[in-house]
Amino acid sequence: MIAAMARLWRIIAPIRTRLYLGLLVTIGASVVGLMIPQVLEVLVNNLNSSPTAATVWIAGGVVVALGLVEAVLLWLRRVFAIGPSTNTEREMRVRFYNWILDMPVAFHNDWGSGQLLSRAQQDVTQIRRWIAFGMIMMVSSAATVLVGIYMMSRSSILLAGIFLVVVPPIIWLTYRFQREFSILTRRSQDLNGEISTTVEQSVQGIRVLKAFGRSKQALEKFQITAGALRDNEVRKATTTARFDMFMMALPETVLGISLLVGLFQVNSGGMNVGQLASFFATATLVVGPTRMLGMLFGQAVNATTALERYFEVMDSENTIVSPDHPVAIDFANATGELVMEDVRFRFPDAAQDQPDMFQGVDLHIRPGETMALVGVTGNGKSTLLQLVPRIFDITGGRIIIDGVSVHDMDLDDLRRLTAFAFEDTTLFSSSVRDNVLLGVDPELPDAVQKEIAWEALHAADADFVVDLIHGIETRIGEEGFSLSGGQRQRIALARAIAARPSLLLLDDPLSALDTKTEERVIDQLKMVLDNTTTFIIAHRSSTVSLADRVALLDHGKITAVGTHQELLRSSPRYRYIMATNTAGSHEVNL
Image (cartoon, rainbow, N blue to C red):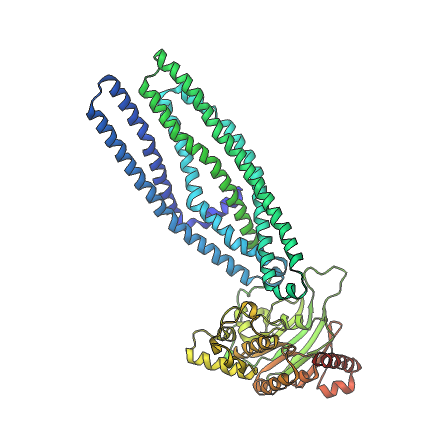
C-alpha cells in the first residue's frame, strides 16, 4: 500500500501546490466549525449569569458568520482539488492508452481486453476520487479529530481522556478491515475485468454464438462470473457494514459514558454547564470525522488496489522499442528492398524442447519485385511477414530494408516504410474513408486524401463503396460486420495500398473472394504493384501469378526460390503444396 501511494505521490507532483491549498482550506473549514461550540459555551454561561437578548443575537451572528466562512472554505476546497485531479485522471488514462498501443502483440495475447478496459476506466476513476476527495479528507479528518480533542480537553480533561479510550479499538479495527477489504476489493475489480472481457467477446462473436446456438451456454458461463461478483460484493458490503457498526457504536457508547460522568462533574462543581455543552457540541463534530476515517480507509484500500492494477500494466516490459539513436530514413529514395539473413524466431512462451519456428531463413526481395511466399498451412508464413515491421521480434539473424536493419530504425519510420494487409481483416467502427486512410498523412489536404482513398479502393476492386448509403462516408459497423467478408477484405487491401509504402506486405489478401472478383482484383493489383516491392502470402495459383518469383517455406527455412514455372519443374514439394491448395480452393469455390 505504501509503495503504491508513493508512486501516486510522484504522479501528482505537478498539482501538489493546488492540493496543499485544498488541504489547508479544508482544515480551516474544520477548525472554523469547531469554533462554534466555543461560542455555545460563552452563550450558555452568559445566559446563566445575565441573560439578555443582545447576548443571543451576538452569539447567533457569530455562529452565522462562522458558518458562512466554513461554507466558503469548503467551496474553495473543490476549486483547488477537483480541476487538477481530473487533469491527472485524463493524463493517467492517456498515458495508459498510449502504453498499451506501444506494447507488443505478445502482451495483448496475455491480457484480456476487458481487464485492460476496467483498468483504464474504473480504476483510473477510483484513483481520481482518492486524489480529489479521499486523500485531502483523510488528512483533514485526522486534523479535525486532533484539534477537536484538544478543544474537548479545554472543557474537561477527564471527559477528553474518556473519549480517547475509543481510539485504540478504532485503529485495531481499521487495520483488520484494511487487510480483509483489500483482498475483496482486488477480487471485485478482477471479476469486473472478466465480465467486461466476456461481454466484449460475446458482442464481437455474436454471429458465431447465434450460428451454433450457444447463446444459452454463453449466458450460463456469464451467470457464473456475475454470481461470483455478486457474492464478493455481498461479502464486501457485509465487511463494510460490520466495520461501520463498530465505528458507529464505539463513539456513541463513549459519548454516553462521557455524558454520565459530565453530569456528575457539573453536579460536583468540577465543570460548568457551558463547558459541558461545549464538550458535547465539539464531540458531536468530532464523531463525524472519526467515523469518516473508517470510510476513508476503505476508499484508500480501493485506491491502492486500483493503483496496483494500473501499475501492473504500466510496469509490463516493452520488448519492441525504437533504438536510442535510430538511423535516418530517406523516404524519397526508398525502394523497399528486403533482405533476410539467417532469421530465427520462437514465441516467448514456446516450450524449451520445442525447435525454433524459423531456423535460419535467408531471402532477398529485389526493389520493385513481387515475391510470393508459399508453404503448408500453419508453418508460420503470416508470422514471417509480421517480423518485418516488428509486430513480433526476431530472436536471431537480421532483417534489412534498403540496407538498414529494422532494429536500427525508429519504429514509426519502419512502419511508414511498410504497409500490411492481414488475412484476418480488422476494420474500425468508423467511415469507409477513415478506414482506408488509416496509414495516410492526416496533414494532407482533404481533396488529396479523398483522391488517394478512391484510387486505392479502385485498385482493390472496392468500387461497391459507391452503392453504400453514404458512399465513402458510410459508417461501417463494429468490426465491419455490416459488410461481407470479401468486402471487408477489399477495404483492408485498399488501406494497405493507400499508405503508398515502399514495401507492401500482403497476408493472403484474396482468400475471401470468389473467382471472378479475384480475377478483377488481380488485374488491378498487377498495375498497382508494378513499381512496389511486395511480399505476399499465396495459397492459390491465381495469387501466385501476381509474383515475379516464389519462395517456398518448409520446416522453418526457405528451401526453394524461383518463378512459379521453375519451381513446378524442380520442386516436388512445391508441386504437392500447389496441388493441395488448388484442390482446396476448387472445393471452396464449388
